[in-house]
Length: 185
Image (cartoon, rainbow, N blue to C red; front, side, top):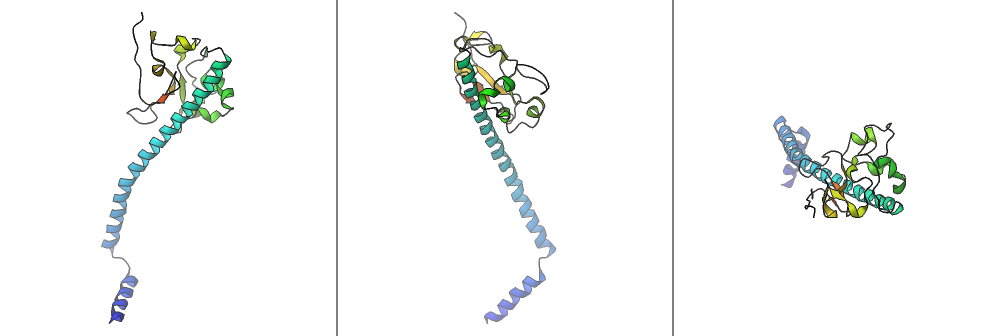
């Protein structure tokens, strides 16, 4: 008796899928892709944000080398430049020797525009230029070193909420804005 059932199975396999069955399979695949794609993009964006934070941490290590060589005085750099051809004292030019000449140290993986044009995905806080490390202020007011941004993303590369990463003067890295000041005595 098992033989006729096996023949029915082979007949079904020979005839193939009906149009209705094929459409149902396509709809199921599209629904799964609609669910998986946004999750995958979210995971990718978070991974790029973490990589960007790691790069900022590396820039902080390079900056520590610079500060050691310059008696703890912050570098006299401009905030950034518009194009690579511009001759200016900026982060990506002046800090490069302290990073083993790795030009990609200044590229956030989520940046698809600024690095190509200017050579950096990051800005330098030029308000701190030429200040001694122990005399840093935030907008002219004293602040905890964990609240004074040194280097930060040029744009909100990592989404609308907490989309900018910061390297603070205590060498911490965060996507959270920690700006607070206290009044002068």
